[in-house]
Image 1 (cartoon, helix red, strand yellow):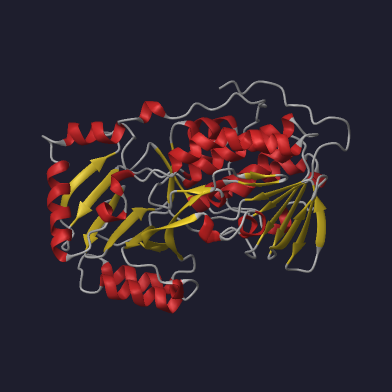
Image 2 (image 1 turned 180 degrees about the vertical axis):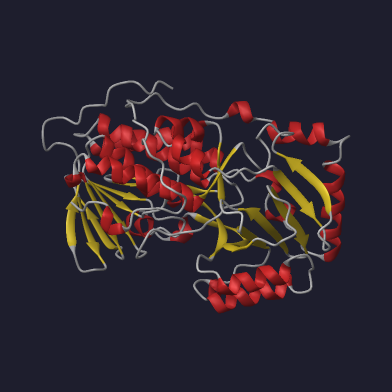
Length: 444
């Protein structure tokens, strides 16, 4: 992909659209960065009071790595990069019975060559966004602690009503507000029209690193009805706990932390290894993420002047491991289409919808056959999972498993050729965790 073309013109002064982005996560911040760089006035509204910390590690490979390079993100990513060796499967005593190293699988296995914590990637994006807004502060407004409550669009724009009581007019509204997108509900219809429950729940949070954990290895344990993983963090003193629970859908778990902790305690009690340490850390975690595993499939993510990006429009759940990749690709393509056709917003959004479709379809694929294969339901199933995994990752069978993981990697969709611009890398990379506070980014 050529990243040296000149920036697409945005027409005469005042003709560039004013874009509202609902959601200040990876998708929303990446899109805001690309829009501001192209001279497009952007407002970001985020329900949380500040940028959200934590989250699981995410990987960049294929098209998403290509986009990160085109966006000039790689210096910051390299600074925060997780140096993972691979995935190690352990039993209740902590004994390793199978390993999948990154090197053995050429970065195409469970651990990629480039891994970064979601919170660190968001820090990188926010730093770049603040840098881009310095050139013209009127192009960017960040609002934390507010969210959309109503949308009404017509041929010339969209009226957005906010929980704060404000009502404003925009040329474009972008839903970057995740799996439970309010924008999607307001402009496309109820969540149940687009969401498919995948048979369980996932939880992620930061915890102190156990003293006997092998540096650089993502350790994973199978237990009846759950998997328990501890993954390296950027700070060696901390790790990311990753829990997957195979249970029927229970709407009462939504937003009820006590019920979530009780579920984890029930499924992980007496399972050995570091389960007690993980459960204790979960109770103290300030960055706990807990949600049902659902697939989101919106066939056409453009509806007039409203469009969806990232998990709001398409998601395979954390089981797919492709949410961040699809979000970055979407930000790159959507910004380019809006800059290319500032006087034809519906047409630009329709072209974006066609652009992102093959990447969205790819991102919804779940490797390994879904939660039924990934998470054993019974004690016997857990024992069989350990036995099969140990055999599959043994030296004689490793080449076969490697071929299974890498099959189809050459079939990734090619990035469409879109107008691009050169991006100047930051001269200084901030220290880990050093991120601008909301007030440090200029408000329009």
